[in-house]
Image (cartoon, rainbow, N blue to C red; front, side):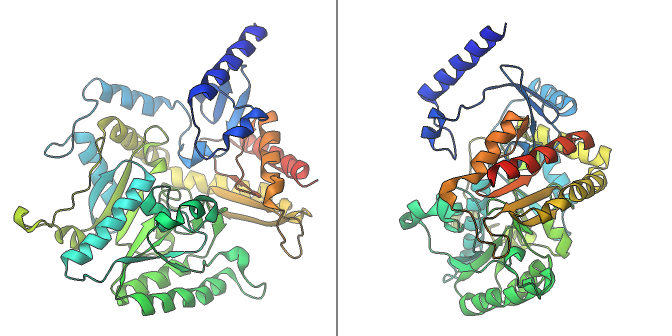
Length: 454
């Protein structure tokens, strides 16, 4: 039986490599590092064709909230499939989209009144940028064409979202195609002076943002920011005071605040949305990833009546927001999203996550003593460990050594899927993870760090 399974696995890999070009992958790596065909998933576990099991410790790129093959979400999708698979949202509507929009608005600040549907995280950022620019144009502010973003930020891979990102690994090759963006130093707590608290560091770093806003406000449409955690930017984190100061400055200088909640929304940072921890209301909120519980691609932009009304006019004025996707608000995806929100309501998820995140915190804290770990950081259900060559100076390992890849391979051999960002190992599990499964993941991470830093 094992020979048959192995043969099937090798055949699947062979067929894949002949036709599939995988994302975020140097395909030549697969000459030495075999990919893993997955047969099924249940809860936090993935099972391959040799019946090896892996804990999905990264929620399959941060999308899965309630485990694989969740019975409740499965049933809601199955019910929707019997009624309607898709219909265009231009001139038509359907209840799953209406219900989802109502529910998202209901859990948002009072000023948020409208929901615009898009397809994925990157397209949500692109549409938000267009919406902000077009709003100012409709209002007569023709000079407002630029965007302000943080260093080390990541907002997506499409040309618009990549323009407001600031990680060379993803952006450098395409820079000549990019829209020019005003980049401001990040308030990243990892870079703070030891004499300062995280809050003090964020306040000091905000001076750079304030100066950029003061200098460029007549030409800037919006500031776009990932609240609290720069996820693709090596899981770097900062204090909520920064967002509060930013909200005040954007309001004063007539600039939109776009909150990119794509990775940090839906409970990841300890609150339903990360911006809530600063008690602010963004002008535009982008949501995706966990919105469907990890089932389907879907994204939304939440915004105010003030922005909506700038587009509400006679057709002949040509002021409408003509942004569309063929599968906008797909009913099956909306059904999955509504089911995911049901689970938040039924299972008191945010409060239960606080218990889990505290358990993860206590289990990881001894890693701060590791000779090659410079930082153990956490916001809610996102934890990250930074591996370094020199702990005292925070000198990083040469990226060419690929220490993170060594940790990744060790994890797979020991039943845990971790996918480090450079030299940063992170833990962002589905919320259904149990304490004994957390114990396994953390034990594997600790051993993986020992292997990767030898």
